[in-house]
Structure formats: C-alpha cells, structure tokens
Length: 285
Length: 283
Image (cartoon, helix red, strand yellow):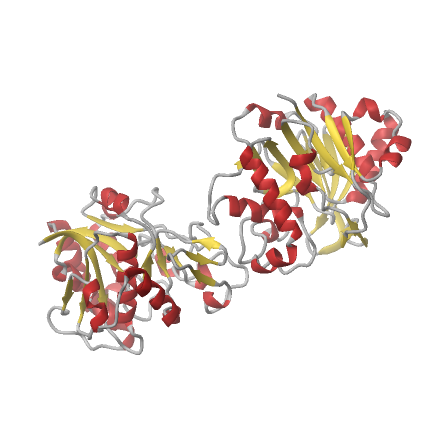
C-alpha cells in the first residue's frame, strides 16, 4: 500500500511556505524515510528556487491560483506583527489530491526531527489527529485549543493528520468541503465568532459530526505528543535535533526566556523566525 | 409490591414541580417502554397526565411547611417509606430520561444503595466542580448526587434513610459539626446524603467513582467548563428537541439523563412534543 506525506505550500507576500515545504520534505526523508508530495499554486517558483526539487519531492500537485483568501495577523515575537493573506482553503481536498493510499498530512511549519509519526502507518485506525497540544510556555491561555469556542465542540489540530483511503474517510473529507463551502453557516451555529476560516475548526466540526454530535471514536490519537510554540515566541535555530527558542516572558512584553527543546517534533507558528531558521539550515548544507 | 420502578417527589410552590414530574415521566415512558413510575405528592396531578403514573402517593405523615429552601428537602427522606417498589431509582423532577436504562438497572443490582458521584457536562465531559461543591471538598465529604440514586428495600437502605431523617430534622446541629467549612445556608439533600455516608463510613458501598455510568448531565451553568459562564445556561447554548425526542444542547446530542436545573426549561413546546410522541390526550 502506497504511503507518503502531503503538504500544502501557498506563499503570501511575505511568507515563503514553499521553502518551509522543501525543508520539511528533507527532514521527512532524513528521519522518516517517506516520500513527500507538495501541493502548491507556485510551481514555477518552486522549480526555480529549488532546482533539486525532483530529488526532494515525490510529486508536485499544481493548485489553481486564486484570490480567494482571508487575512490574519502573523506575529514575529511579541513586538512585531503584520496582517497578511492566509491561503488555507485547499486542505479539505486532501482525500482527492493525495497520491497515496495512506497519507500523513502535515503543515509546513511542523518540523520533524524524529520518526515517531511513522507509527501512524503501523496501527489499525484509519484516521488519526491530535486533540491536545502542549505549549512550550506554560502560562498562556490555552482555552482556544480546548474547544473551538467557549461553548462549542472539542478542538482538534489539523496540523498533523493521518488518513487511509476508506469510504468513511471519503465521507469525512466530503463533509469537510461542505463545511468549508458553507462556512458562514457553520461558523454561526457552532458559535465560533470569528470570520476567518480555520482548518482546525472545520476539522473539529467534521469530527464532531462524524461522531454523531457527541463524544465518539471516529478520530484516533496521533502517536507522540504535539508540542507547539506560538508566533509570540522566536525560534533561533535548530542544531541537529535541538531547537533554541526564545519564549515570551509572562508580564514582560518584549522579553524572552531562552530554552532548548530536543528530540521532539515541533509546530512553529512564528513563520518569520521559522524561515530565518531554515535559511540558516539550508546555508549550512 | 411491584418489582422495580422510578420514583419522584414533587411539592409545588412558585414552581410547578408536578408539571416537571409529568414531563420526566413522559421521558421515562418514551425511552423505557415497560417502566413503572410513581409520584409522591400532595398536589393535584392534571387529569391527562395521571395515566403516566402507576401510583400517585400522598407524602407520608405530615407535610412539612417550612421555609421555601427547606421545603423540598424536608420530605425527601420519606421516599424510602413511600416507594411501592422493591428496587427504586429516585429522580429529581427536573430531569429528562433520554435512553433505555436496562443496563443501568443491571449494574445497580450489585448495590443495596447507589448514588451517582460523577456527573457530566452537556459536552460529555466529567464535571470538576469547584464552584457549587466547596463544602464537599473543604469538609472531605463524599461527592454524592441525590438527583439520581437507587435503593433496594433492605436493612442498610432503611438505616441510611433513618439517618437522613435525623440529619434533615437537626441539620444545623449536624452541619455545624461536620460541614463547618463553607457552611450551607440551608439543608440540602446532597450534603445530607454525603454527611450520612461519612458518618456510616459507607462510601465504597454506595457509589463507584471509577465507572462512567450511571450518571447524569448536570446543567448548572458554572460547571460546564466555560470561561465565561452566565447565570442561566439557556442564555449560552440552544436547545433543540426533534419530533422523535432527540435532544441537542449547543450541537451536542444528549443521552442518558439530562438534569436541566432551570425551571423555565419546561415550556409548551417541549411538553407538546412529548405528548404527541406518547399520544397523551386532553381528557
């Protein structure tokens, strides 16, 4: 049965997601020995910027260039931030787009430094996702990651998802597309109170519906733990498997605590510092 | 004496608890076809609802006319004596039974008395109650909920209820000794049952905190896991009841027993939906 990783990379005016996808694919090959497919609306740029792309990517899927995107604020630490385009509306197509029978769907800002996710391919459940994330700073308000809103359903992380091609998962992804197409409706009845479409929210709603609007076992738990650092922190570098991160200090705006985080995969939400880190890594190769 | 059944106590005040009991009885019949239901009350039961009950039993002995707060609790200990069943599940009137409870009856057979000690939010999460149950934690009382409990006619349950009577009738004395931290303003049956369990040192005999069921969904607003609770849960999440009596609260399908806690939850729409389903006719 074919297996591999699927990532989406659609650049905005300031964040190079294709560079992130390229770096992630190298990491996946190094630590997990799996092929990576990238879906992007900038194939020409990819081929130009990364001439060895054929050695890094298993497949390249071309997405249509659209102007159908939202905006959100991207922080670069606590003191700097920009309002940028956010092109995240392709993820719901993953079932139809993936060339694999077994797919690990990853965000490009999820940095792999071990092989723990390989275990997803070795177990029996057909759909896996993280429900709980662990913030490297332990003082922040995590409630937005418990439920999709104060009164609504459980939150799941679309950052890292495993699925097999099954009839049930086909229904799930069709449902996801339906939710996305009718987002104002679902946004309203699930009391999300935010106009920005988020894949985490759409996945959470779809899982809740697949469970019959109650607690259920449609979604299994991904192996390992999902650690994350928000865009208010700054990732400085990664030395082999060890990240150096400046974590924002509670009640001291603009000040940070340096920490080392080793051997675990990490979801890095600060895209600017992630790309700076990748630049350093790629320059060293 | 009948084998087993559900029992409720209602004493009308400003709130029509008899109507709540009738709605609860309809919900039991809708989900438990052979169930027997009895009501202990001195109030008038509307004619069209009388057939919901196998027995309508007057409150034994004298009805206590104490203050509003203690009115409900003053007579609860009498349920042991009033029940017509060998095995009884006692329910608060402000509950809806939403599923067949046969497996719960089977589980409860293992006990002489059983109190629920884990309750759930409408999202199916176990309640961790730091708001309403301060007295329980501070005074190391067992975390019992009288809203759903079970007993067999037996010496142990009789003794337990005799103690409940004693505590209810002397609650200031007992609470002063055993519930001095976060001393309750009035006598409540949850505290009373917990206190009796502590006195009799029988918690392991009357509950099991490791099992998920039996339980009920407890809709007091400050235990729903909300960061921004309000005085009424109905102001935060919607209620949807389908024609076939599937109850959804804020996109969460409910099952088991639903303890709605707010009296204005009962309205004509909900009553008529149950009446239509069961064919309850004006008579």
